Length: 142
Image (cartoon, rainbow, N blue to C red):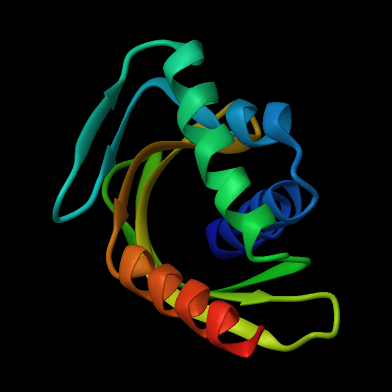
């Protein structure tokens, strides 16, 4: 399978796992150890328990906003080695009426694991700010 198809397939599966609040599926898509980074935070994920706890927090944020679907838009794929790729995505988050709640950008380093890809590193660009604006808008709309 061409690498771009593999990347598309991976992120479609990843977004569906998050949108269906499937903790174990999300966790299974990461390597341990892995890195989660943003401008403010850096987390070395050294155990499945740390990954599970962090993922539960993200899933709770999505539940708080009533996220019903998440759509990835792959912006860039760069081959780093024979088995690793750097990807940049724009994510779109929707409620159950298909109203966009917010969008954000995130970058990933992926590595092939058998016939699948797994996440080695995540760099969150602007999701924290976009999420905060969406929460603020939701509170004003009430």
